[in-house]
Length: 396
Ligand SMILES: Cc1ncc(COP(=O)(O)O)c(C=O)c1O
Image 1: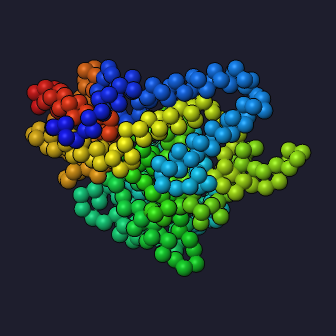
Image 2: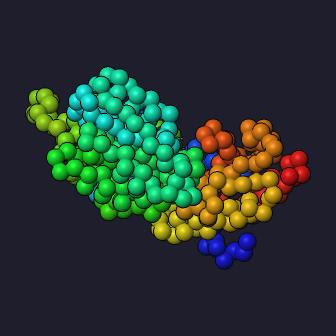
Image 3: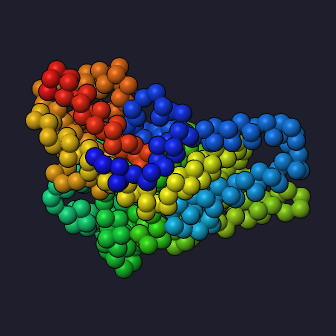
């Protein structure tokens, strides 16, 4: 593949990511590799806090400013406003805020796809048990190559459906769901009951060029430690202005409330902070903010997404040339997740063997496949080396 794809400075830009130096990394969907500046920002913040006094008027004000700056940086990446963002620890925490925040009634119905992550499935199961909520699972996996996901969702809504749970970018097959059309089908479903749409955005934030208000979804839960390459432990939840009105907090603390002069809670915060609880690992916030700035210094979100698609198409087409390999998707990927199967080989064994050679990929259980994640940071040469390693493995 020619260099026409890469902005000439990409190789230099990559040098800021120490995790990319000694391995060929295809696991950004599991966890991203942090830029050096983000690691430094975390340590610098810890040091500064110690120097000024971990609890002091000066540091408390300084940290409040830093929290707001992170909220703004995330909002810019997501095409929304800071008030719609709740800072959390990870995707699952954000999903839990939305799932437990609904005023469930016995007989309500949740519709969930068959491609959701175990933590979300488990939360929905507990809600079902505790509140007598019915859950049904619809087959989205089958629509990877043909079929209409909007129609699948639409035809599975019932008169009791209150929430649809789905992912924007499916972590197993790499399919991107048409969220806007799905959200519209849900919101137009009933005139007397609102069907809300909760999105697991683990794989889409930091990858797709997003404008969340345009998608018309209600809740969008994400993390900073995957495609955004921030530290583990900082994520967020977008709540639309409309959905904010009827979502109640479950875990509650001083960060979510307004206080009077005696420090007594008197009202909920009227923005995303309502769902934040208490003290967090603030130096990690600076790590994520710095990681986002590092990406933006290379290119805007459309530039990055375009490069991801060019590279994933390249990987996909090279995989097609290996006889024993079949990609799950029959057309080029619309994002950076490329899932494939290798005939006659146990996938786990192959992934372990590749890891021994410095190629980091993962297996997926359902459907049984190997997943390679291509970031804008990926080099075409890395894809070529992976293809060679695959061909050399048992001479497939
Ligand atoms: C689709 C999806 N949902 C949820 C998660 C869990 O993410 P977190 O650990 O940030 O909660 C993952 C992580 O791999 C994922 O891929």
